[in-house]
Image (cartoon, rainbow, N blue to C red; front, side):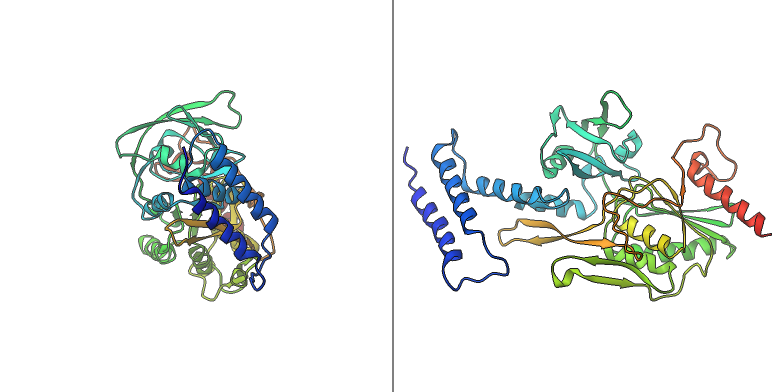
Amino acid sequence: MINNNKPIKIVLLSAFFALICVPGYSSDNDVPTEKIQQFVDVYKKIKDQYVDEVDDTTLFNYAIEGMVSNLDPYSDYLSKDDFSELKIGTTGKFGGIGIEITMDEGFVKIISPIDDTPAQRAGLKAGDLVIEVEDISLKDKSINDAVKLMRGEPGTKVKVKILREKEEAPLDFELVRQIIVSKGIKTEIFNGEVGYLRLSSFQSNSTSNVRKAIYDLRKKSGNMMVALILDLRNNPGGVLGSAVGISDLFLKSGKIVYTKGRTNNSDLEYFANSEDILEGLPLYVLINGGSASASEIVAGALQDHKRAIIYGEKSFGKASVQSIQEMMDGSALKLTTAKYYTPNDRHIHENGISPDVEIEFKELEVPSSLVPDPYNTDNQIISILEDYRTNISQLR
């Protein structure tokens, strides 16, 4: 069967090829014309000889996806439908299981479970590899394909198979999808004097919310708060500006973070310029393998300035910045455009932040009397409180 559209398509490709070859065509980067011609040749052979007909949109999407997805785990090409899915996710309400994910050597890796979601309640952990959803292998599938399989109508069930470090066999979970809404902040006062603030993600309004939460904690304690625990465990990150703003709440001066990239607007520096909201009170920051990106900016800045003692386990190790650029056809390019560094010039990508006091999480069999339920079996929180009490006793 003769495809009447084929000559037109080839002419269009040839016109594109001619455009980038003609004298006077300029670009900031030289276009590899031989490779463009190779692409055109491969395209023509697929159109002429592949066993099944493939439409142009699908072929070009495959080509772009392959080019972008092989750059790093965080860069991605989003088709028009995928971009719409992403925008649904960022509005804060969708039917899913509640995990932040990335790609790791062809597998979907959990950065962290989201608080108060089916994934967290079922026991999914940071570092778990999701290898199957509904008996469909995720090996070498795109992160967008994985998301589509896990999302669905709230109340419906979904089966996932997990590979976990130190477990000999895969683990099977059946979860019930729900509307996923990040609650952002939880607070508590321990013994009427030690504030506890759990931040589950960095949203655009997180800085003002954290500031208000600290004021409320002080009021709740009768202005007797003597220390603060900032819990960033399983916080996968979010808005860079909020990471800077929250760090600034506790720092009087100095560099918070800086970014470096290949474009002029990628080289940025952020500095503290306000008073310490705690007025020098002891600050403890909790991190673990699910603390990533913006969480690591805060932990790294406070650690480098010796403003806080970092407790817990080594963080995830994501020190890159992605920007999303919408294309003319409604698709989008999510591209890593910069790397970030802590004030002491540490680039912690794939290395993470090492805590000052390393404590592996273990749920206590005997609840502690130091804190109320559900915190009284959390050995990391208990360790901070015990260390604080010891330090205060020594000072006295």
